[in-house]
Amino acid sequence: MNRNVLIGIIVTLALVAGGWWYFNKSGAPATSLEVTQLPATNTTSTGETNEISVPGMSKYTDTDFGFSFWYPSSMQVKDAGANYSANSESWYGAKTKILKTILAPEFTIDEVYSPEMSILSSGDAGRTDSNVDRYYFDATARTWVLANATARGVVVTTAADVSNNTMGGLHIFDGSTRFGLKVIIPLSTRNFLAIRSKCIDATDYPCNPAPGWNRFNSAVKTIVATDPSVATPVSAVAQQEVIQNEAIAYGIGITGKMKTYSNAQYGFSIQYPDNLLIASQEMLPIKLQQRGTLLQIGSRDEDGNVSSVDVEVGNQQSDVANCLIAPSGDPEAGISKPLSSGAVSFNGISFLRYETGDVGAGQFAATDVYKTLRNNTCFVITANWSGESPSHFSGAEAAKIQAADEARAARVEAIVRTFRFTSP
Image (cartoon, rainbow, N blue to C red):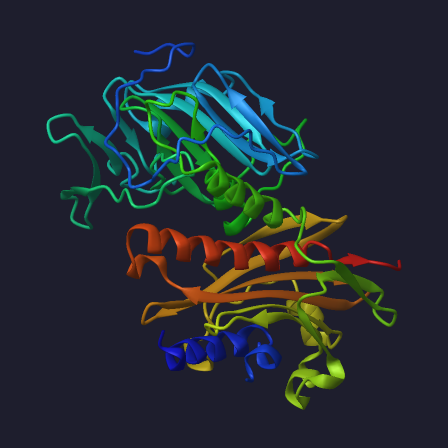
């Protein structure tokens, strides 16, 4: 690992988010799944038949379309039927049909049938080329293909990236949608799951329009086909670890005995595992104290990968005025333009949330910022994590690195979601 590059990346983001100083200083009907065998993935199976169970998590199985996924037991999954079938062709292409829509915690799943073995990847993204970009199955080569339109309107085809898979061995293809995340998972050459990280029906169903990268992706990773001939899942032990990562992302079962930091002056508390370090304000450098950073919680592993959560407050006029505005970005000042932004709520608090990040030489550093305004004070909670980029590796090593990166992201996200106000 190139630690000099990693430290450079972390320092850049530290200027934006308040610093990581303390921890870095050292034709198939809905009832009949078409089971055309897909090309094999690189996953392995040990033949285990152990029943998987993770405290606080439940398994949802759709026997009609033939798949399952895991979600927090305290949340609701709703079958919306064919209520959104009118959007089929505009979102997913000619002759496609949305057979059913599942409203899951903070994301939706469209079950899409395509007799043409093709599905648009960005049909609901609002772009001029949305009716061109698509994935399709080449029956002759027996491979998935991605077709994209260039700026001049020329369609270019390339082999689809099949390196990213669920714990069930199903391919996860990147898509795009307005104001959110989207992936497409083929269950067969004609049956697809289109999963979007936003609500489409908030009238009678509590949901979050911007759940965040790690919770969305950790949930997607749990999808398994109920027909064993579709794809080969990873081992039961590995599946349990994937589901546990999702649980951590939702704040369920954080490892380690929990401690609580309380601040009477500003009336808030936040919890953290006792195996992490905490630096209160007086332990931080003067520069961070002047910025209003009250504490940092986190760790640095033996490879130099950092994960931390910072809490900062500001009650100056400029702090209050700009609190609920995502930065536009200023490269010369070292301020990155957010990769995405949106509103989120937890523990009865509404936040502006935005993401920033940087990559280089096989490393990455990411930051999620949560901002809320209360009693003329701007509260800023920053979740930071860094690691190696899985794209620079292959096979089992890439999967191992990706799992470690996702675990770090899930842990800081879970800590953030314990933040609550303790006084009016």
